[in-house]
Length: 276
Image 1 (cartoon, rainbow, N blue to C red):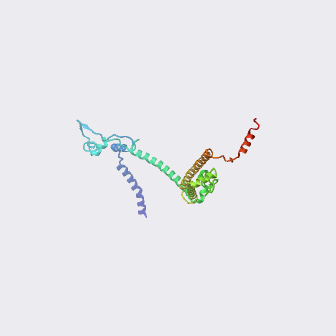
Image 2 (tube, rainbow, N blue to C red):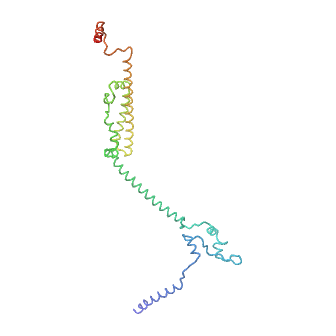
Image 3 (cartoon, rainbow, N blue to C red):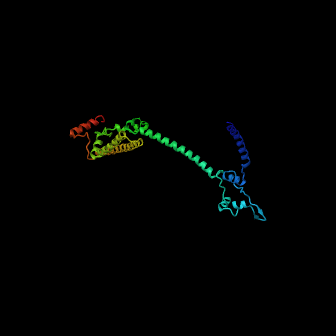
């Protein structure tokens, strides 16, 4: 037991001896050349090329300078000393440029993330309108295309008279029907109504559906313009034909009937009986 106590008593003495010995043997290094190199490696200063040369009678006598920067130094050391300022942390240094680039990339990453989130949300919204069951609830349909495409549904599928074709009179309808114009217009009308029905009943992306709406609207406007053009031209032609027929020298008045000489004299006397 006494031996164990003596061993524990020697431990503090041993630690004290090690500490004192360490203070006398460890020396802090402060090499000015290394400090100057550290300054060149960061941002403080470019230059201070230690160790400095020493001259005796014009001859450089500092061996350390000769082996680091002088004639015996490696070529890369001399190129480094005579080259440009390459401090990485100077205002225009490479490391600062990297920091700025990282910051710029972070901002770009935020923009890309925001754009991707927007695209994702838009995709989710578009997917909700993919099915034809929700076409009536689409805001753009309610605000614009429902009103613009309503005339297509109001126009008869197979018009049978001039009223349904929205022509001026029966004679115009018969003329267009005889020339085959109404048959061609009926084919165009069938294509327009079929495309309109497909755009309302098929499952497709929201953007494609609106493209079909727009294409159908353009074709409907062309159809209406063509129908109006044929209506006006045919009506004008028939009116002109009737005018020529009525003013022909061989045409007889519609209310004219042959009369005898006695009837002619009687009509003349009735016309002038109050003038003489």
